Length: 262
Length: 280
Image (cartoon, rainbow over all chains, first blue to last red; front, side, top):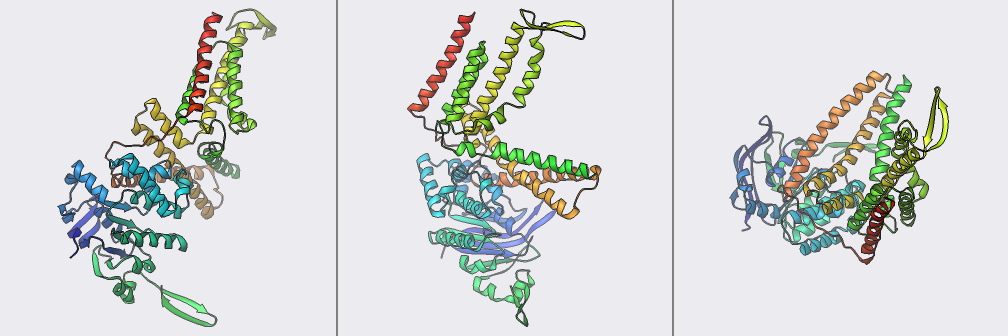
């Protein structure tokens, strides 16, 4: 049986102690697995990813990562902090928050440098990431000169350069054209084949089947209401509609008007 | 009323265009040219040494010579000379001419008269010493501004920031400057988009009072957005292992040509000190 990386048990979290974001979440993620987190807007997906990346901590309940109970205190330990940050990579929803350096190259090498990776190894990783994501021609550009698709690829590259065991991705394909979406799906599949654990929060149901084996569905009550294989979740149209994940689409073929879910 | 509206729109858009063109355009820095090919650290040192030479020298022909050298450097660095003058001749040197103008007259600088005339019944003359002081002041400002613009035009801003480290500027400061540079552009785009959105919903803003209210509201909104973003950016930094001490990688490589150039500029500086001594 595969080792569990993350364990969440009855986790509660609220912003400013007022605005609830997670309301009794139970979750277990295994090493090397592919998971998708889906749910309507504001149901807690991004907060869950932020918690898995130890950027926020439970107000109540237990969050364990790599067999350690997670808290702000444990991350004050430099050794553990470096261990954790080197193993978990988070691709934020908005690439403009992730790409904060003056050039793409500096953004990609930022993570490895902060984690104390040797300079020649940093250069090797930079070249590797640039080749894998086909972004070599962008390295000297400033992030503000990139298209949204390029920004997303560079944001993924900035995390891959850390060579993490776990990749957390918040809406990696939102607002992208079909080809860039395809490129990103291929990158995620390749990363999982290389042994990385992939956890993706998304609204794009058409990519869920390809990038996940298990799907966690967040409900309006800000907790996981269903955990099931992706094929099973995607087949349950009524359930998806109930949770704002699909809608009934009406359109016309010549004189025939028909309805179907989207 | 419509004039007020156009005034707000024109000012806002003109400022944004000016920012984008002057700060973020890297056309000149991307061209192949003499200064673009130099190691940025050596280039910054060269400009610094030339600045010192212009500041220390008290000879008009010598400072004019440095200015001439600056123009030659601009030409061999694929910079259109008219564009270069447009960037350097107006504003600062122009205003410095106004500041230096009183020094021309015998009221402030007594000496050998060059030209005399009557002003409000008073005999006033332009003195040789006054003309020399004003000329040196104006030339120094013009040369200094031109040298700085030359450095800014031929070096990518991100590289220019890295060069600050050579001058022992703390890394955290360099990093904050880099992030400012990165996010000013983003916020400028937000301002532009917001203004377009307002225009598409409200059409022309009917009064200046309403215009001011909208601008004030947008300033507050932008501040809130920047506050939110700073939290997210900090999280993104923490997530990639940042622990308060930024670590960087130096990639500069200086070659023989770079050191030769630095040698030439150092010679110019020594010459400026020597000719000061000689003139005294």
